[in-house]
Image 1 (cartoon, helix red, strand yellow):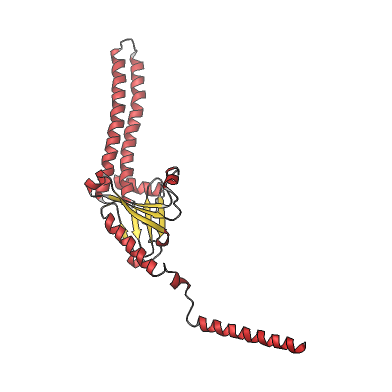
Image 2 (tube, rainbow, N blue to C red):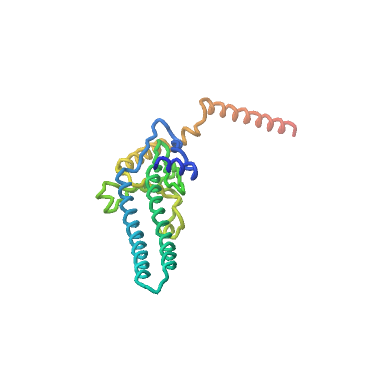
Length: 247
């Protein structure tokens, strides 16, 4: 049943297929996924929220109907109508709970982190798909963020900050996701990924971030340029001599 639900969501929500590697050496691209413990971690949080919502709804439903049953002045038709009217929202809440659980698992499966020798790409989300590509030339900071529950599960989030993010105070006032921060959420090898990114970033900086290769003149261009300058200088000198002789 879940496979049918996943296929329907991919078709209706137009969820993209697996992401292609970002710019760089595709042969050296490495793909990282959120750890299985990350799904369990989010499942526990989902269970706590669901238990509270369903428990409150069920308590309200039972309490209201018990009050009606104990009131003998209420006609049976009214009792039935109230039971149906109060049960419908609870059933919708129950259906939403099942749907949110399936979305939670699908979000875990559709979460990708790809790193090449020049850039990285992060994709997350199902209903709202967010895909972010960051070149190493724009990376300013790489940090591991880990809370107490994550430490207990052996998980961590890797935060990659890019240029243009502004101050931390400005980011707090920003509405919506910060487009200058990429997150590798729920990975079990955050230190390894951090080291990989830093090593490739250092390698690119040592190589001039690729600018020397991209803008280097072709072989023989410098001598040809000098010959052209000499020819222009000779013509200008001859023109000056001709003008001087005419005067």
